[in-house]
Amino acid sequence: MAFGITRKELQEWKEKIDKGEIAFLTHYWLDDRFPESKTVTKVGCNDLQKLIEWGSQYGLKPEWIDKRKDGYSHYDLLGTKQKDILKKEGLLHHLWT
Image (cartoon, rainbow, N blue to C red; front, side, top):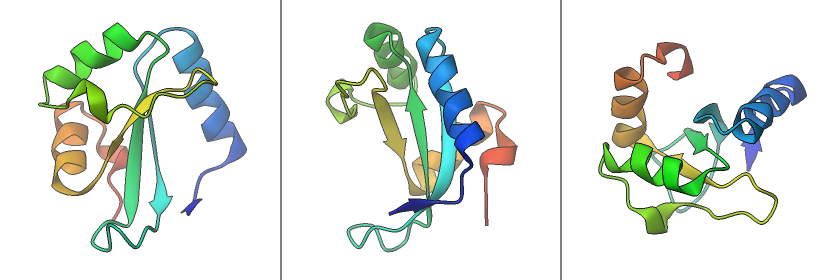
């Protein structure tokens, strides 16, 4: 279950993806499969090769991409990996407590 983002934030994420940019969207998220995670960061791009290359620098596998028919394919970042990547990307404002 996702919550804690505005329609504007979601639209801005989609617009960046539509332009072929690597786009980040962090929101609160609850999933019983991952009880230790309270947020998820979706990292998307409509250029799958660009997304794969971006992910490879962080050890993310191409098969972990949520490939979407609507064009908003993305990685889901959780836990320690999420925090480490956001710090390296200089996106500290995405880190929530």
